Figure (cartoon, rainbow, N blue to C red):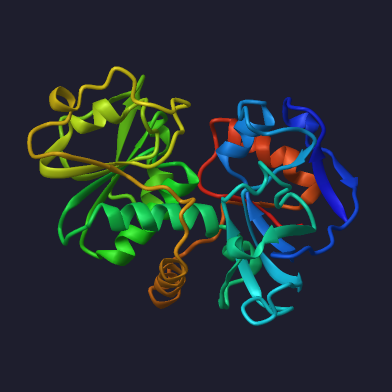
Amino acid sequence: MRAIKVQQPGGPAVLAVSDVPTPSVKPGWSLLKVRGFGINHSEIFTREGKSPSVQFPRILGIEAVGEIAATTDATRLPVGQQAMSIMGEMGRAFDGSYAEYALLPNDQLYPIHSELNWADLAAIPETGYTAYGALLGLQLQPQQKLLIRGGTSGVGVMAVKLAHAMQPDIQVFGSTRNVAKRSELQAIGYDDVIGDIDGQLQTDQRFDRILDLIGPATVPDSLQFLRHFGIVSSTGELGGVWTLDQFDPIMQIPNDGYLTAFYSGEVVQSQLDDLLALIADRHVDVTPTKVFDLDGVQAAHEYLESGHSLGKVVVLP
């Protein structure tokens, strides 16, 4: 099969396509014919050698959609079944989705039924599940004000669309370092756009809910923009900071304010099914911003790193 097997960490140039053996099934694992996958910032970090647990050579890719090509669970995962895989250790402890086929543990393959095309379906797994799970945790209510911090990211763009589908009369604001993207962001569903400069929100507004996709780098600042009984969800690490160091919850979480998080590595089949049903029933536009083929993965990484990206980038092998 054709795959991108990264031999050693480095820049986008290490993402070269080569011919490698197609994996054979083994007990408890099945073979997915990869029809599409998204590109994620965590894969950029891994490619750069910033994931200490990852050993090279490695085929990257933490998500995929496709069809079961060979199975060891013919009841749940028959050959030809549409399936999705998210997170776990794919692309990290074992080879992932940057390939024509991926050998994955059966408990990390989720059977699905969707009439979406492969490009749209490929935009959903990690991005859609993360956005949906975080929004559920924020317990959105009618007529609230929601701020999505990191509004131009793939998860941010998905979240604004899902938020409007879940609560049609909610107001959704997006933050960005580049307010010149205002018209583009409003076109995809944001009611207004707020500048975010050096980790500081450029507004005096307060919000009922804040989905902070920048993560620990900006969470202390986000907490200061909550209304009473507001919630911040720290769901993302776009700021490149993984932990809240020297964080005093008594002093930094405002009275009557709440801090939560969402981890997409804990996938619940029923919640995934609910997400796909919401997208279908409410006709949520999940079309990716850019679509590449396997030979274009290097260009996909370069685009995502450029600072000019907006929304989800997918690859159709």
